[in-house]
Amino acid sequence: MTSGALSHSFDGIADDYMVASYDPRGMSRSPLDDPQAPQQVAHHADDTFRVLELLSPDAPARVAGCSSGAIVALHLLARVQDTFRRDGLMPAVAEFAELLRKVLST
Image (cartoon, rainbow, N blue to C red):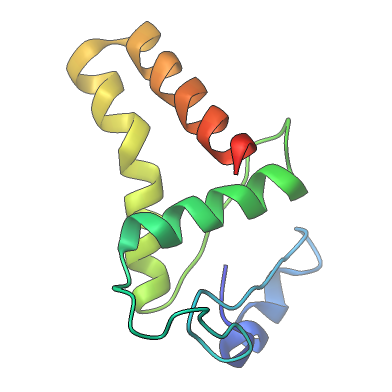
């Protein structure tokens, strides 16, 4: 996922993949409701997850990001992977399901 300003950077892979671009909270075309509110990587990762669920609900997805977008992508990937390594498959699945519940309830 990239902001509108960087979306041209991924034109070369559009022949092989569906490419989606969005502006994270507070960037470019996505103004903040409350500009004074603290920005958190976890919020951006949740936003990215929602976009992925809308565009590719039952299929794997590849995520690319530049600068802060890369930090968000890494945070998103690390969330369930840490649980999987620490506690095994079923706890990771439970965490993933809980994340889905949060996303779908908002």
